[in-house]
Image 1 (cartoon, rainbow, N blue to C red):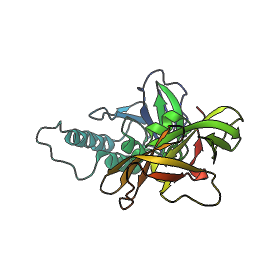
Image 2 (image 1 turned 135 degrees about the vertical axis):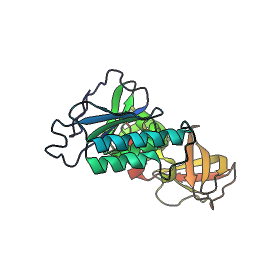
Image 3 (image 1 turned 45 degrees about the vertical axis):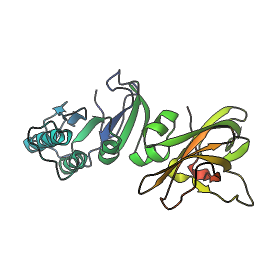
Image 4 (image 1 turned 120 degrees about the vertical axis):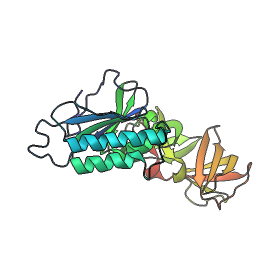
Length: 269
């Protein structure tokens, strides 16, 4: 299978990647007339040691030597290289550096979200061998189109309700403004919102109540640089909220959740 530098990808990879795999495309910025006349494409995997195979053209000897060095460092990180010392930087940064230096269009398969976000110009999130969503790291993270992508890239709350119109759903009887497309009045709907995007207050807000959900704290965990809350809204849905560590709200307390409309993303499926 060949992925062009334009980022075009087949919609079905015929089972080439497993459930929940990131399939990354690094786009080359420039291509020298002699360095890569045929558009060489490198493949490597993150299932243990990384390997590289030229699918067309001939990458430079220097590139292959550096890639072999990265593979050795990957073994060090995994504790598989005898007597290997921990590298100064994670392998993912070295992979990115090699691409930026040699400019070969690269396909990189990984199950590691940090590697995906660090090394890719484009990420194809795959589900059962098919591309679920293709886009830049920022686009995939900020605008997931499906529940699978929202849960797989970072962590998101999935909140379900009924669509009121093209821009609103009702959650536990409360109207919630959201962003995205695909809502039809009366249909079941779902939105995603990330834990750190929700504001939690112990004081009942005054005025406009849209996008404000009353809830009860079910869990409060101190994690050093943050607090991790699980709260339950009126219909029994549990929502996770991450705040600064200074904000200490006791279990059982009544709270109000403010969900910014621009962060409530409509999921297409």
